[in-house]
Length: 221
Image (cartoon, rainbow, N blue to C red; front, side):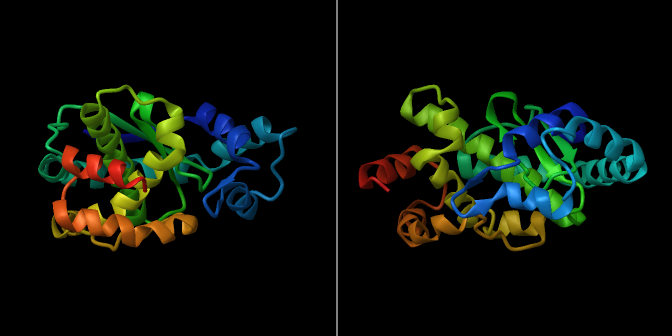
């Protein structure tokens, strides 16, 4: 089950972590500065407190609308996840938090993530499903490789890159496209050069299986 809520204190942490951060061609600090030009490390706690207070109706509406949409698709989404990962996750709990920053990070250890409040409803839904399929991907990787993954594997490195690339193929499968109602695109420009190589493996397996992951590992992509 996927639900969303608000977490102001998490947004404060995200600002501190992402205010000057970029990776694989994505400039998260720049995205923050675009929409919040007057925020800084010195004033961020007061700024975020005030923003939440002044924009409470907008933020609460975003939570309500996205939860309504998630309720409609939860059952079908996890049915399709089971098909492509051979994992039954329908009884797991995944929690999203509407955020004032356009960073949309995930936290594998707590099965939680953020969604930017200014995205339209379908884009917010895409973030939710994108992140939950990441959680499924890393759970499958732990099963196949017989190891517990840490933040180094889930937030950077080759396995993280594969998780981002796989989502392009995965979420554009017809069953997922029916739920998402939009095309899934590669978010990180620097990963584009690996897209074609991974597609050759994906086309052979058409699912995130142990055979798929082991072939990818053997090729050293």
